[in-house]
Length: 443
Image (cartoon, rainbow, N blue to C red; front, side, top):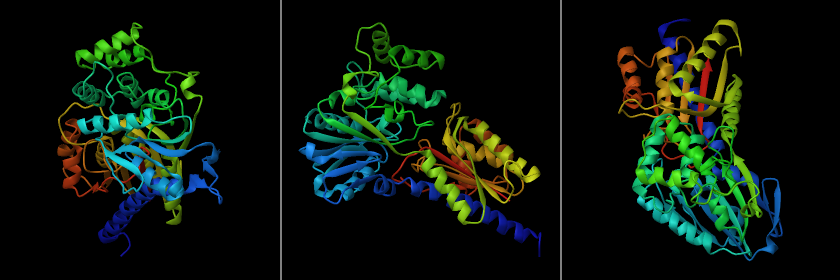
């Protein structure tokens, strides 16, 4: 019977399922196996390599190696092996999501907080970088997560110092631009310093962006691009957010700001003379694929933005308001419609619970959603914050105990509340990382 509770339940389930399907279609589209196949190719004679819009004559080089790191680094390396075959000499990548490779060494690291094994793996990567010469073409892989996965503490700073600093920064509410300004100035690799070590070689950097606006100096802390930030900028971040860091870190940054140590290389530095950079996948890659999946399902998609940022729980309310307006007035899209957004929200940690930006986004939305709308929010790398969940899919029926859910939000404890509601989306490591993705199904 039209309008019955059973019909409403079916409609709600269909909306939640479509939201999930669209989001996962976005993740799949950004996988390196798909992206590299489309953006990197050898010509029939195996004499020229196309990377994005650039063509590189392979006859100019005696070897081609892959060096880099990030959540998706081994997947990129595996895809490059498929393209290049015997043309690829070898290489080293550091990741927390290993893929099977034949020529490139895949070494372990940890994310989002650096680890001892990450330090050891990065040391091997730097040894490989120091061994290249003018007859080497380096395919430098930089993907989301590289900042944590490639820890190379600057002289006088320990891994413990880096871990404590990273934890404090991630809890502070600072933006990724601000967090990475500090990371770059505590590293022997980040902020263009890897390019300096590779200066004798030809370098083509392959980037999978997990940063709003795709700022190359921020993605993976910009190991092969000029760094516009300074030691003074890094100190300002600590002061602006009242971040307490180990004495060794503050002393190191203060010494740099006083001119006692060399700045990270900036624009015009000769280290970048032989470097070209190619952004192969971004948040827009995932957003467009999610929108296309909605179109295939018969819904009119609307891309709201790929640059949504700010406090996750507040951004969620704005998305709910979009759904309410669509249902009430037909603006900005006439239901049935699917609204897609991307970007990177943050969480200012005040409690000691389990969660991440997408889980807080979803729980906050679940408290506000009413009527014919469902939302899926997830991190495309499959790991939201430090949890085992990618995100969650919710609607107005997800939360039954609203007081308990609000308490969970205040304690930054969104994961248990959404787990109890059977709302979690769990994918495991996805093999990619192009930031956060949200799909709102209306009507």
